[in-house]
Length: 367
Image 1 (tube, rainbow, N blue to C red):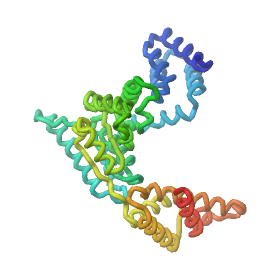
Image 2 (image 1 turned 60 degrees about the vertical axis):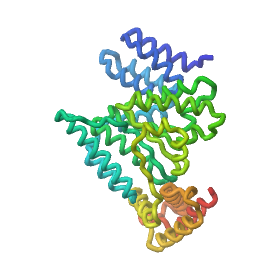
Image 3 (image 1 turned 90 degrees about the vertical axis):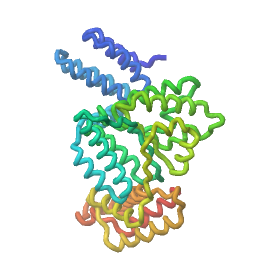
């Protein structure tokens, strides 16, 4: 049954389609009601190219879109599209990469990849033979080791080099690649690929697609469609699959046809205690907070205990530090709340040892 908002949106798009001969608005309507998050942005982009229409009519379409999808969803996609539309200089992106804490081998591999792509471009410009191999990658590492962060930077680097037309970033998991009913999975994967073309499709825990190899026909269907896309769109799409090292290795061993589409395998190591403290200090500096040396010593001791207690697979690395920082800020807010009007700037900036102790305790409660 068609909802009132769907009817309103269809009528609005039909008006634009007939008035300005925009046949793609019919397809875009279908994509909007199928929850394609980029479709509204394409509607807005097309609308803004038509100068002769009144601002009032444009506002009417925007209000209809916001009402149907939700303001936050549209704004989130708008920010993503805006970021992707900005070509950041390669040197600036290299500085971002090389400025990350730790990850020396990871950064070295990415730097070599960028150097290779740049030299291939120079060879092509001079009429020399070039290697047009796949740009798809596999990131092997435990949670919180900056796999997603590096993937985003890589996408923007390739956009800066002209290897990707958009450089946007789409993150996906099993639920984005597997349909609820038989026969719908291939269509779902194709729609996701369509959204990702021109940018990076990052598939976290890719092995979850085929964990149940004996009966998960949906997962196999998804993988078949994905493998085809890796080849068909290799010139303007980078797919990065990621997950736990052992599970990723098993995943590729059981899918040799898929492995041949990837030629870059990067292992992300766990952070050391000192590197985790550096990440914590960056969180403080970037958000105008501070701690004293005693608090840092306490946190260092707790991290060491956690690393000893947890297996490599269960410790959340940088994610653990982010959670401790955020919980520490909440603990500080609760502590200051009753006398916040009398709090000094120093009080507002300082996280005490007790705040961090409470934050660490919260992590154990979560576990």
